[in-house]
Length: 355
Ligand code: ZN
Image (cartoon, rainbow, N blue to C red):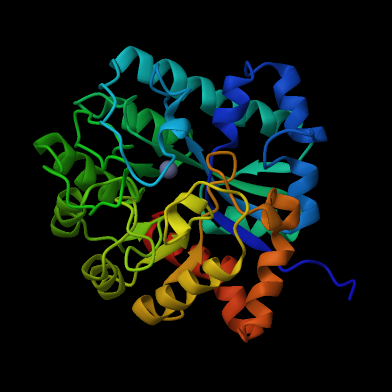
């Protein structure tokens, strides 16, 4: 069969961090637009694999991040939460990564669009442009008075994870722990509650993926928007602290929210190993379990491309059709696949955003 690949809108990738780590120069920007051998995601490979858009994360790195993935190895691990970042450091890296995305858009000749509404996303998709949405993973750039929140929202920010797995003025985050429960300590601070209410007012999506269980329930209490975890899996299958308990899935379903399947093998495999030699069958197992817990309108994709070790068979974004084929082979119909691959994201964004 030579038909066009089924379009995929993705809940989470870290390509902006990769380009930032590559120096963020025009060379890095051209490597995204023209393609490069390294990493998981660039424009030519997105086109090849049918990736039509997604949430592009800005993650302000901690100083000692380099060996982080190495520590998540072996039969079990329990990483301490990294130290809090200074506001000035959070702002410097956040603004640098936002700038990378805006420069990509400018240099792309219309091939990449920064989208601020679902209408923007659909328009980009229909003209064949990559529909990108600015997302923050760890709100370290935002001050306690939330002045920067207004500025970033005006620039196009439409999604925030209040914390990465690290404490900040808004909350505590979930440490990387295998095996481990997401219930690891205190959740949101008072300022965290203020941030959630401000996001509701502005129509910014709140991402639950790196909150611990207490923080999750704090958002349930404070937020009037659908509950969304952009890149998390099923704790009952892979008992890592980053995955969601059945009680969390129930709350997400009750809010008509969405969870994006994370392709990180450390969050897929029952043994928690970070190992590219992992079949797609375990992804289907998580999708089945998510469908059972959330229903057909609650399940989507959240790759973690450029931020994790993913199964070799879908080792970069050009190989996404293999995941679609695995869903087809497992008996998912075209309507369900379309919902998981694209429509459930657009639907929940439309019910969250105010633009
Ligand atoms: Zn993440």
